[in-house]
Image (cartoon, rainbow, N blue to C red):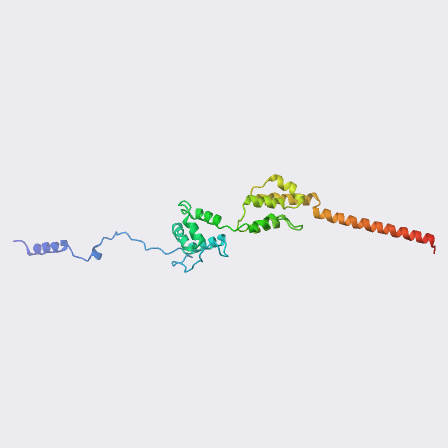
Length: 248
């Protein structure tokens, strides 16, 4: 017969080893990986999209293609659209001639915003009305090289003519005193033309070579001086003859 003390100890051991039907959240192991909470937008970027719209581009309004494209890029940037979404949204902002043009584009042009931009600006670039003014471009008498080139660029603000054509017209419009320095260099870009023209301007200033305006002014001054000299000589001759015939 086992001792009462031993029976009690065995029963206590069985109770301790028995499985406990605990709730699942309590019985879960302690090494469960912690999933990070979704992070918000970076500082300075709102979570919501802006409720803004842009007008439809028809190709016939007062807004130029370059101005409208700039607004479109700003719009998709504010909406935080990826490029793929921007390409899908683009035709929904076109109407009339512009919408018909988009429908004729090939797949390659529609694959990137850069390709679409080039095709869009090429198709809807302004007419060459500004180009007529550019052909009449001439550097003014008291206009510096920088001022003259900036004026040339402003006339072609909408890129209605090629850079090669603009360079050619601008070169021919420089003051004659600098053309012999500028023209032989055959600049490839407007920036290169600006650099060589600046050197030509400094060369003329240092060498003291008179400009056409200065030459004209010098000739006029010389003619006036000669006329005054002749008038003075004639007056002296008349006075001399008068005193000889009619002595005081």
